[in-house]
Length: 246
Image 1 (cartoon, rainbow, N blue to C red):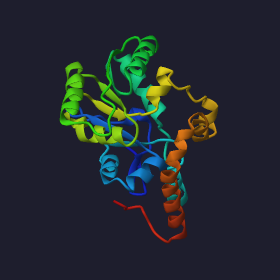
Image 2 (image 1 turned 90 degrees about the vertical axis):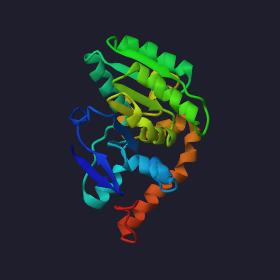
Image 3 (image 1 turned 90 degrees about the horizontal axis):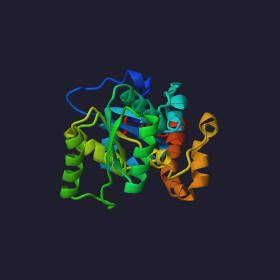
């Protein structure tokens, strides 16, 4: 598997079809972006979750600027929607089982109904955990029990960043599944709860702008995003290097 180091993170830069699964334990797939990088500079547990992922894929394109400008290496774009579509099709072709964890029952039900139409060979279950900043022991036990009783091939986690990545990292290996994948906003797009971004915006690398226009609350992320670009600026000037930051 081809991985590219960027600011201390090993980011997957290959076709999704080349991901090798463990077989005896779940493969943890998370995404990284300027926003998650910024959050991780202030949240050690989140940083550990990202660095401990088996596969860390590029969310958006701008995190790759660090690798392009500092090393001349690009990182293949495998964003949340790409990962979602690839594995949904893969397991549909193999009569697989998919579990969705997170969001509301309404969103999850809409996902299930649409998926039955788009991917008729899939068996699908879901669970909406309590909406709270931290889950208690009983909450986590219930989620693990729900998933393991279904024994899915893949678990998609949509609890927003950084909650979903932390949960996947901490409990993913306890799940009877091949893959645990955090995809966040894809839940809302696929369910129809939020309008999907037109391919035009992705093509011209402006999906971030469209998301901000549709959801102005995303502006709250910009201070974290700014940390990434500030670190990139310092690295380009040779003032400080972050490649091996932990």
